[in-house]
Image (cartoon, rainbow, N blue to C red; front, side, top):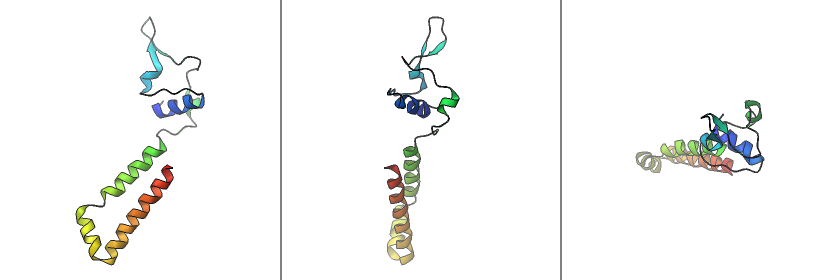
Length: 104
């Protein structure tokens, strides 16, 4: 059970809880960790199966970071000197733009 899945499950029910999964639980008087979201039953794995494990925007941002990391100062200098370099840089920029569009 991931935090993202539980947050999505709760959001559909009109409840917003921030934080890790410990935010959904409290210790009962006998020391047992128990679900603690008033009015909402604890979700089962089947309830959460339809939700992705990770926020899709997080994946998009990770890909943008990976692409931007390729554009070093040295590669920028090299790109400015040749048509191949300019095409490479434009290709990276196009990929970044496509990823940003996916995040919207």
